[in-house]
Length: 152
Image 1: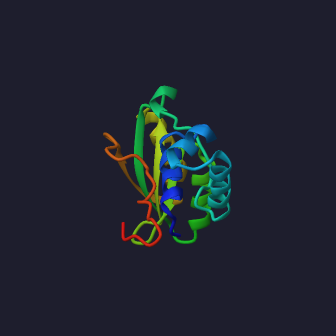
Image 2: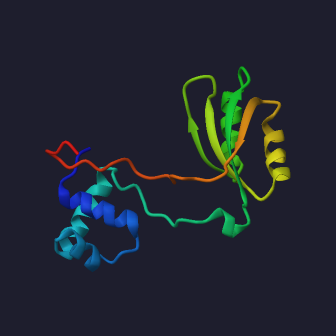
């Protein structure tokens, strides 16, 4: 869905600081507070803004290790494996994908031993290939925002 320049500015500002006051947001967008409030409501109704969240550092919580796991369920085990992934809280993200693997997931764990324990829970239901994350040069970010009538 396309947006105009004011919608784009509102979203860019909320991405930087989702706790920004309506007054400050209105100042950055060049609109009144009621105008910004109405635009936010419409962006939510259109499904562009899905929610607001806190950015938590896993390391600060003791999760010093992150891993990317490619998961290929064994025949007939797709739904069982998906449910396992959903039920294991250390899986922070998971995408269902095309290709050789069915899922690509990100785990946060405090140690290799805990990683092994989690992978052992699905080993009889899926093949896995695991990569340890060394760094994250680009954290999850939204796609580019496009302005209506613009080719940006």
